[in-house]
Length: 166
Image (cartoon, rainbow, N blue to C red):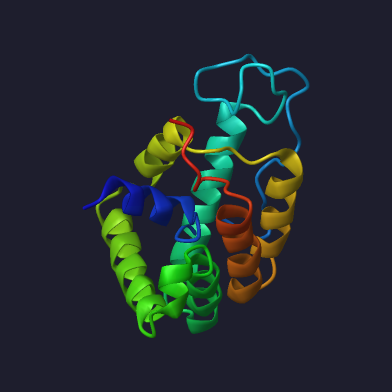
């Protein structure tokens, strides 16, 4: 499987949905996180790796909670396809992407690889800031469609967990 696809799927973080839905991960940034090779930039102050990892895992768990929700996937597919003009022109691109992502999400969840996928995502992709994390965490409390909109926009509109840092 193409590693970009796996990362995109996990990045979608949408697949995650474990835990108490009323409990959201910490959205506050550490005052001065130690720079690391996985942070967005060595000088950028932002959420620590542990906080971003917990956020990623919470999103994947929520995505799994929403894995059979059509509205969630419609929003996610629409946002993803909008990132590529060629895909946007293809009549079946969105549905094909949705089916592939559902399969990948279920496979990763069933094999216990969601957390590992977050680790890979953090190593190679842009991280969220505290405001983005708070927005997605709040949407996680609402509906699958709201979560898909916030999470998908963060990923595909803002490049978080989607744009490579390599």
